[in-house]
Length: 468
Image (cartoon, rainbow, N blue to C red; front, top):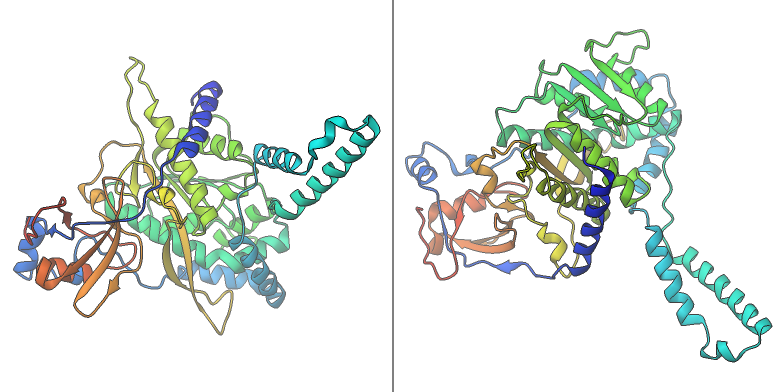
């Protein structure tokens, strides 16, 4: 764990980066691409179908594991489901419209700016009594304007009803997002099998179920942290199958209400899912992220809602860890970069979304079945932003393939793909069968938002070559 002096220097550095950040637009690529030779040969011989190319991911609607769904139904049998669904509707809207807390420095700067605007130029020529009166009026006006214009962030307090409402509102959506992210990890790093997991802001224990589903019978220890005792109780009840007298089959199943300060015990997989935005300041968010990273031996997964605020929280944490890791030193004093982005970014550079004039979140969509929230309309879709940061320096070559960051636009004779590329830039390419060849065109046409595009984008001025 780095010293707090080191932490504050990095915090100052990150603040400076946000000020001097340049603006750049999504660029139109040359449209010249080539298909990697091995992939070309497999497609040419029909050994591989275009719709099964190696960048494709499953986009099937996600369902909760049968055991979890049965446990939820058992839990809800003893509760007022109608009232919980009403509460869940309100909670869903509140969580989705949530913003990051406004920093105290920002409020002070805005107050000083408003005071300068409202204070008259003749203040020095006034009598002390007049000056005091004017200053009091200005302060009252500034406070009123700040109350009206400043976002009032407030921490959620999940009591028994609130925990049940969260279960109904978010379990299916959270599980779908985590299932998709863990599937991405499994695809890009097939040797990674988490045997120990830390779940920060664990809520109703969705991470536990997603890990068990993707890596069945591999989990040896699950350590969860959530400030709400009611959330912890509900999470344990689900693991017990909804039976208060049931047993937890995993012996090393631990629950805590506070994040341990020590980083002596490390975990293969550390997850913070939909929790960073519940922390009251950037300083506390980054201190928590540093703590989680120090407890990570394999991979750290950070997930938030796919809103602009959620993207900012993920991007802030991602940039912080990459900066912190770039300052890491071995005992011999050598600088070693210990953090690499596994997904969704194909690079370790700053997120290019942050450099666009019009701010758009980097997010992805997943569909899911949700009979818990509504029996009639039991299909849902959610957007999520995430990052997977790996400590190992061994990164799959597939990681460098461009990531499709918007829905693919399929036209009659061409396809438009918007990509995040391994050089840290956003690019838009237009592919057609005539210009780019049958294989490149069909690969793009069969791809979806969130997939990787297994093509080499050639530099400006190169002619199209279907085979690399």
